[in-house]
Image (tube, rainbow, N blue to C red; front, side):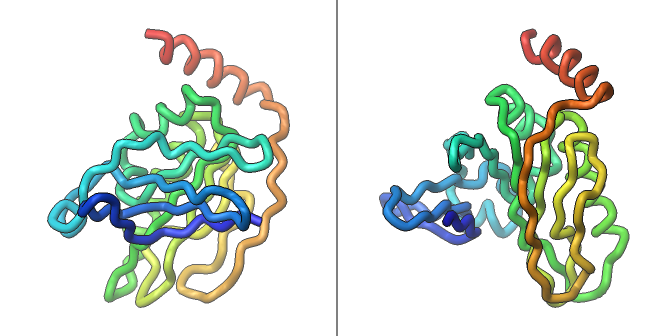
Length: 180
């Protein structure tokens, strides 16, 4: 069993906005957020780790919240051939904001399509959820998305299926662009 949790970590008197991978009997691993702004910038140190973990032989990329807006953070994961990317959010608002929700969802779907990689997002739900909890396939299609602002548990049996025709095409172009 593996648990990936968003948390605050401290290393040598520096605080980080982190994703922590925990598994009984194994070394705990951290990824520290790098795209800091506002409150994050005032309170945390910029991370310098890749955010790539191996779980049962599967490479998984991790990003945190605001990083979803920057394709370069996901292109790093593409170069490392991750099979699944996970974005941890705490993106909520005091009032219902469906426009923001749809904008962030579009970023997630775009990162999935650009990098031909399954992408999962996980978010808090209160007071109002402004980023989805769901999983999107390598073409950005929604596989499963939980209902907004409702407590629930997403269960998904990950299987990395072969690329379809369009995914092969995007991957071939991405490989050429990545070589430059």
